[in-house]
Each structure stands twice: as structure tokens, then as C-alpha cells.
Length: 148
Length: 137
Image (cartoon, rainbow over all chains, first blue to last red; front, side):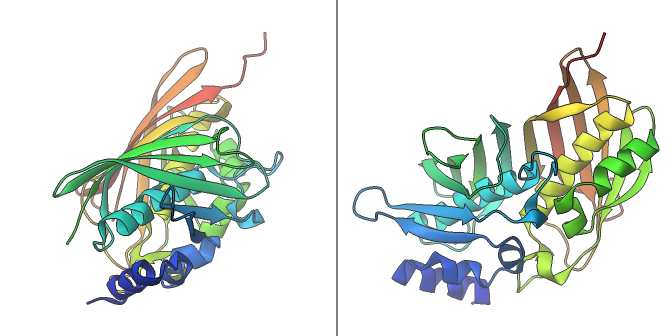
């Protein structure tokens, strides 16, 4: 079993997804964090990017780079699938991001909802937001290959 | 327009942090960029393959650059779609190659791919649209 798969299992067992991200160099590079939201009602993994200048696209606003918003949405989907399915990290088949508004220089969050998970493929919708979950800055959807 | 594309790309703090480099820019809207492999950008420490987020940022930056290469100022990315065609290979740089193939008054359309040097073996493909600034009359 790979280090990543071991970290996945540990993360699921104790609900500590920060520990899983610590194993991923890119997550450390961006400063990405993750936490289990209110397990009793929603059972959602929320990923979180604290604002950093290295994550900025447009420096005059300043605003998060669109690629970073996309990366956070994709990560939300992957972690939600890991949490819900208990498999290793899925592989992204495709994903789409609709950018609704500028992601400003403050904390950025993303959550994902599995629409359907078959034996091999899952369809997931994601949203990224800042102050309020009801006012998303970007929406995502994607298909993911589930690996056992 | 190459100068505009350069100024745009190297003015993005995140593109600089990733180390994205401009390879070529044509006034017709075709741009090629390079993302060097780096250990701190890896998604899976076992395989050493670059994280998907790096590919997303590379392709979003590239798409925007293609619009600028045509002498047009994009305001923001409207949407982008990425298809993962085959797994990326460890410790290899990624080449992004895209074209802005249609511009209307309000929207620019871009498609492209990224690969490890062989365009016939693309790792991912991109389709994106960009909102344009109001033209000054």
C-alpha cells in the first residue's frame, strides 16, 4: 500500500483530512487545509485555502488565480469521494468550472456533493465560496474514476 | 503582442510561484507555455506526478494568454473544462499548447492541450471561454 493510500485510510478512520493533505506536496505548497463539517448532519469534507500572495492571479484586485479556484474544487470532490466511498484517491476523468465572481483576498472554501456513484464512476458537483456558502464564487462538476 | 503576453504571464503571482514559462506566442492567438517538473508541486509522493491543480492553473493561464496574444483584453475566465486523456508521467515538464480560435464582441473561445513533448500523446485537453472587457469606441 502506498503512503498516500495509508494516509487515506488513517484520515477516514479518525476524520483528520489535514493529515492526509500533509502527505501531498502540492497541498503544502498552496497551504490547503481540510476538515470534516458537522458529521452528524451533513458529513461533508470542506477544503480551505487561506489567502496567500502566491495564489493570486490578478494582483491589482487582488484575486485568487482561476486555476487555484479550480484546484480547490477538484480537491473538494476528491476528498469527498475518499470520505464517502472509502476507496483510494479517485482519478479525475473530466471537470468543468463555472466562474461566477472574483475570489477576493480572503479565505476560500469548497465543498462537494456526490450526485451518483456507480461501481467505477462517480459524478460530483462542487462549489467554492468565501463569506457565505449561499454566495458561491465558482461552481464545478466532474466525473471521477473510482479506484479500489 | 508577445510583449503583452509576457507582461501578463509574468505579472501573475501564482504563475510565477509555479514557475510557468512562455515558450512562444503568435499574434493569431496560439501560445505555448512550459511548466517545469518540481518536487513541491507533486500530487502523489509515490508516483511523483504533478498535481492536477498545477495542470488547471497552467491551462487557465495559457487560455487567457491566447486571448491576449490576439490583442484582446480578457476580463475573466467564464468557464473551463479539462479532460484527462492519459496519466501524467513523473519528473517530466508539461508543455501547454492552446489557440484562441474565435472572438466575438463579448466572449473569446480557446481550446488546447498539455503534453510531455509529444502533442500526439496529450495528457489533458482544455476548452475555455473568457469574458472580454467592453471595447472602447
